[in-house]
Image 1 (cartoon, helix red, strand yellow):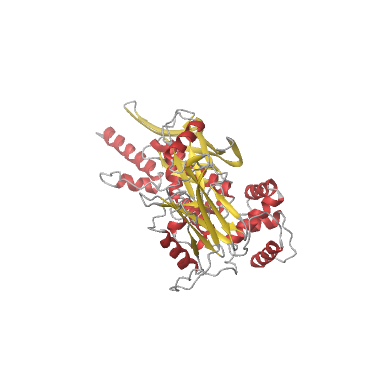
Image 2: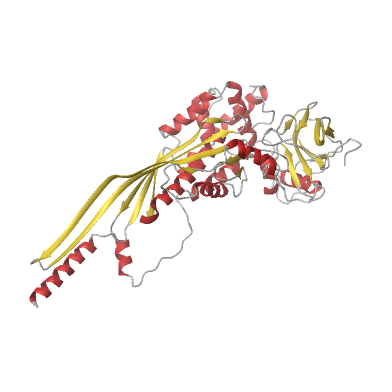
Amino acid sequence: MFHRTAIALCIATLLAACNSTLPKAVQQTRAEQNPVDRSQRNITNFTPALRCMDDLMFTAGTRDVTLMMEELRDATTKVPVSARDMMTSAVSDMTRRSRAVRLSVFGGDQQNLAQLLQQAQKLSAFAVIPEHNIRGTISQLDENVKRESSALGLAVENAFGVRFGGETKFSVLGFDAAVVDTNTFSVVPGVVSKNTTVVTQRDSSAADGQARILGANAVFAFSAARAEGNAQAARNMVELAAIELVGKLIRAPYWQCLGVADDNPEVLREMDDWFLAMEDSERIRFMQERMRDRRYYDGALDGQASKNFNAAIDSYKRALGLPAAVPLDGAFFRKFVTQAVPRGPLAPLPKAGAAPAAAPAEAPLQLFVQPVKSDASQASVRVAALAPGYVYCYAQNPESKAITRIYPNRFVRDPRIEAGQAIAVPGKAKFKLNPAHDYACMHAPTEVYNDLPPPLRWGDFDDVKLASFDDIRAKFAESSGQAIAMVKPLTAGAK
């Protein structure tokens, strides 16, 4: 009897000692009677970062970034997850408001890029293909690269023994992704994501895993259930890759959404790479576009250091708190990319409740629509400007009544038109117009895109969900407070 009591006391003492070393959360779980698992929404560490990217692109007026995606393979054959579906969800979360990125998913798992492009052209009403393709793979899984174990045992007179122990295993999971230009089939320089996750798995009862993503110039930690550590690690890396790839493609400060400082050495190096990779005209065009979106510049995106551009730069420097003599060097470029400024002095927003501006008495455009000589099933739209401004053109299917924006588009992003200039749509762009459709163009004296309501900020060739061209003109005028002209075809045979 004494021996049995002694054994019981020893075991109780040992269990109490072991339990006192466990984390409080585990102790609480074990103290609950009949614990049950509860379903939870899958919110990762990067959910806020995805929404941050959405807000960043919405504010900047980013538009018509078109992507397609091949199957994201698992080269290790040991991580049975659908990385492509994870990437699709991530991009969807990243474009809730901005609609800046349009991701098309085509074909089966074994199709290559050429097959995907052929299928994309067949399925699109305008026979358009995305500009870029995402390709990637779960490229690395090194299991048990390090193992740590510990144990504690007790035996009583060779009659009874008990042993408690634990083992910690470390595995490394890698994900690589890049963006390919669908026109040249070449990788877009610098638009890559290479991240590695160190997953820690503890083989003790009620234990959870922990992981760290080593990439994007920082270390991100998250927890993952022991049985799902690799799958959760893959999801986090895919979401991080979505942020990196889009941020690098549009040259936006995506690292701010990840909580990485602007003065991080790797961030500074990346901005220096952007600066040095641009030719002078490309760099000026980049600044022109950003300043126009921020209301400091009104003019063509021509890459020319004109008097108009220099005046806008001086105004922008003052907004940054810099003297006018500061050169447009790498240091200025870093401030230009990372620092927010108040909206500029051009084209202030209308007051709330203000009446729509009346259309000008004389249309500043002429619009011509005619079949293409070489193929009567295709149409060409030609717009001639009598006054400078910004042109947005739309097509309406007479049967479905769906209206889509055909200009500007993913091939020609700048809506600016000068007096005496003429533009042709589709021109050299790779899409087709139907001569049976109705067409109309809007003309605004200054850029209005960032003032437009969400339906008119959606992607090119996407249904704007408005009933008529007149509705579109009214929305342009109401949101911008400007005199918006609408022109329809002048040709005798046009509708």
